[in-house]
Picture 1 (cartoon, rainbow over the protein chains, first blue to last red):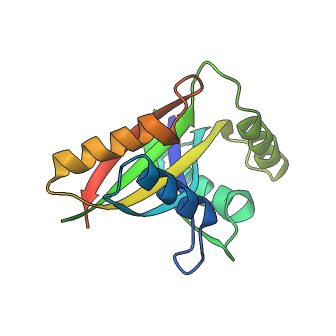
Picture 2: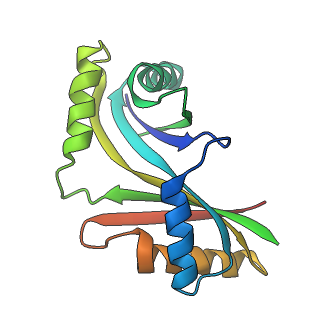
Length: 83
Length: 83
């Protein structure tokens, strides 16, 4: 069966996020002053073939740990849906 | 009230995603061959102060249209939650 994993990889809360800071300033310059904090990470979608949702989740987490996320600087969460 | 907008900005389906292609090949090299397609975009979280959820959603969409997403190459979706 086909599954899609939606993975968010974000910089750790303890770390500065200069890209987010720059976007925050730009939003203020554009008049959107209600925004107080911006953080920017990656969104990865994996389309995969797996026997069931558990296997698909396991594969997605393995992909994050082995390749996609750097645990020193980033956290990840992944959600798997059918199709 | 405080709201958090979770925004995903992804390359359009019609466009090649060389970064995703590279990750797909790397996953195969690492033995995760069940993955068939990878696409990589950005995940942005905005913390903001707004009167209600509708206003927060409007602000987040305005931020996407004015600054965050390039409509020629990207699509975005945003979900707003309290807190």
